[in-house]
Length: 215
Image: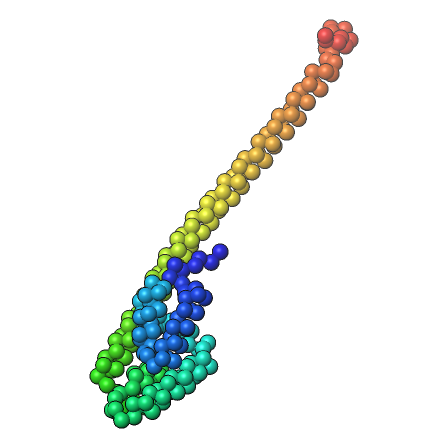
């Protein structure tokens, strides 16, 4: 039976990660904020959540991501219409930095801010650390498997030696048994011949040349 890792992601964890991340995208927040929220809810680090989203969950929700982006754009459009006269930096820029980085889209000066860059770099630092943690975990598992394989090989060699010794002992005992059977057979034949000789009548010749039976 295959062992289940204690830190394995369950379908419920993936669903929570997807729902929260899509909501943050839709509301114009950052994915880092989403990962932090998910981490608090399911007891994981934001880096672990980001790594899980980018490596596995995201590809299953491409259509939902596009819909969330459209809803976010409509939301921001309404904000711009309401506050057209007030210069501000929309939160859409924060999300766009991450989205463009994931898709290798060029970043413009307008889409960047110091806080956005810092948060973005922190997120990828966490993702990098989580990736290293996963690599170390796999390396540890590999070492354990190598040690287990080495132990099994030693056991196999020892058992093979014991089997060879047992076969040698069996041949020696079998040879001794055959020799004993031969000795017992010869002894039995000698006993039969002796009894036959004793059962035969014996005679002797007297002075006159006559044979007399010896009792």
